[in-house]
Image 1 (cartoon, helix red, strand yellow):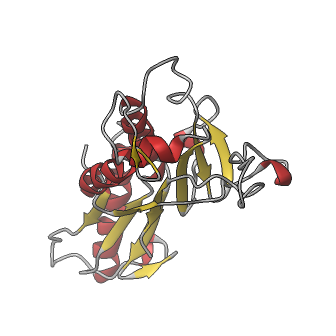
Image 2: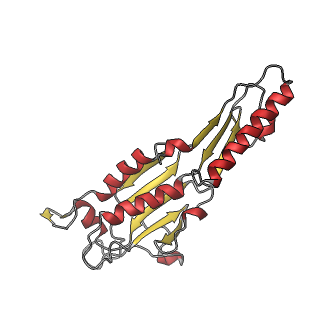
Length: 218
């Protein structure tokens, strides 16, 4: 389902014969029931922001008689699952190691494919998806210097994933990075780092590795 479907805005025609307080109560009750129904039926995640007449954190009951209630559901978890599936489908399948080496860092906390749970994203603002294999950049650009490399999949997998996420989730931001230092690297004791170069003048430096960044718009 398109991400745009999850920006739930509630406006109602209310009986003008009702008192202002009754009109506000009716609008608030209808908004809450609609929100709960979306979550109950799995059409929206159980993580959202509430704006009442443009103000965040205000209870629905304080809506003006002719006001507006907007729920903005956090789609990062769903978008990350979509992106991971897209990237795995575009991965070289020889041995399967590359395909199973994607990680998702949620606000800097890294999770493997096995441990990532979209339901636990909560109020996160950013997810970075990357691959810990040392040849991730080679799969992405399919060049080694001026020498053309050949893989069983086309190049620019992270760029194509970025486009796909933007199309599927227009309420989120998605960008690709050409080089990252993996969040939660080994020297921080929290997860897998990127491989270090072993030879040449850049020996000891992290291998350039691409990534996809999915974030909540401010």
